[in-house]
Structures are given as structure tokens and as C-alpha cells.
Image (cartoon, rainbow, N blue to C red):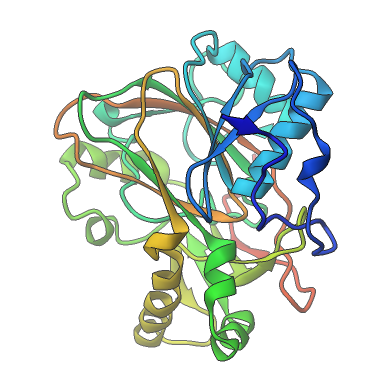
Length: 321
């Protein structure tokens, strides 16, 4: 492990200035941070997650999360459903998934169980972008892990934007896209089982949501610009489906460049936390018929703001009772 002070040099403050993480000294209470790649990902040590963490520890975890986009914790054996919810509430307001049912007895835990048809996410996406204020952070805990396969990959969407040429940055900043949970599931998941297809139709997409987001948003905590893409996009505003597909492929390929990606090989009791405002992720579907069960909580986020100050907007959502 290396001290927390050696955080990512890519982190910036809310005014876009370089964050000074070197001011935090390693003490018995301080977390430890080991970077996993140059652009994204860090493993965090010297902390047991739960609802009793000090404000200092929560502050250090949040700073590491903003610096490294996704952070990982091994061997969190004490981190059960109750502890996950208590810890998540320290990061912000915990919100349930808009269409999936929470786990029985919990306030906001979503169980992702491959055996029930809702555990596979083998496409690049940012969580729940089909609503206007999609989640800020996600907290994912490994409950059952297959003997092989089932890794998850995360990509840095801030670095992807920064790598664009000036001309492509101008293009991306001018684009808005419609995101929806209603899409061609069979085309996106050609290897899906009948059970998975049924779950998508009966649960995930039974209530239809649509939101319009800028392709480039301003990060509300760091001031950085990031790309808002992923497979929930249905089309770009003002462009037909053919041109939308070409634009999507052009920009999405910058997100998933190998330099922007970190890969995590799960063990039972691992926990991952990611900045859903600055990443996409992909869960590998390479574990055959083995069981893989994860439990996720999400933290409420703000409505995205474009580079010219315009807000994302809801296009469609179910009527409230």
C-alpha cells in the first residue's frame, strides 16, 4: 500500500484546479491507496467499511473516489446488508432503482443475481442514465462469485473527453442524446437467456423512462468535463438513427480505449465504489451457468449541466400514483 497522499494527479478541484492530496498524512485512521493503473482505479486499505466511519475517513474515501473514479476494498467480511446501507447513507442520500424491486427488508439494496435474470450487465453503461438526475455513486458488494470469470471493467469518461481532438470536443459539446430503459434488448444481448429476456420485459422496462442529456456534462464536484454515453442511448437529438449510430461509435470508442480501463477480479466480500458521473462499466459474462450474486446501493445525483449551462430534462416517466 502507499499513503493516501499519493492520489491521482488527474484529480481537480471544483474550480478545475489541481487537488492537493499531499496534505493528508498517513496515520492509524487514514486510509491507504494503491493505484491500479495510470488513469483509473485504486485499491483502498486500512479501513473496515460500515456506518461508524469517522468524518475524516469518509472525506478520505470521497477524495480517493474523485481522484481515481473507482475504488476497491478487499475482505470486508463484516459488511452485510445493514452495514452497506448505513455506509452508503454517509456518502449521500441512498436511492432505490426506479424499476427494479429492492431486496426484501432493505431500503435501497438491489440484488443482481444471474440466476434470476437480472444479474448480467455485459454492455458498457453508466447506471440509470434514463432518468434526469441519475446516481452520483454506486456501491457494489460481492456475495457469490463464480470459480472463474465474472470480472468487471470500468472506463474513465473524463479521460476519454480529454483525449478528443479540439474538433471532436466541439462536436461532442454540441450534442444531446436521448437515453431510455426501453431498447432492443435482443440486439444488445444476443446471448441472453429466455429468463433474462423475460425479466427485462416484465420488470426492467415495464415502466418506461426517457431523459435527454448533454453528451458532455460538467462534473458537479470537480468541474471536469466528462462524456455521457453508454448503451441506454437511443439516438442523438436532431440526428437520424444511422447518423446517431455512427456518432455513438466514434465517441464511445474513445471511452473504451484500453488506457482508460481498469479490470477487477472479484472475491467474496469485495466492495467497489465508483463515481457514476465519470465512468462507464461492463460486467463480463464469461462464467457460463455458475452463480454470481452482487448487491448494489446507489447515491442520489444532480441533474447534469452542459458546457453552456443547460440542464438535462425528463422526456418520459410513469405517472405517479
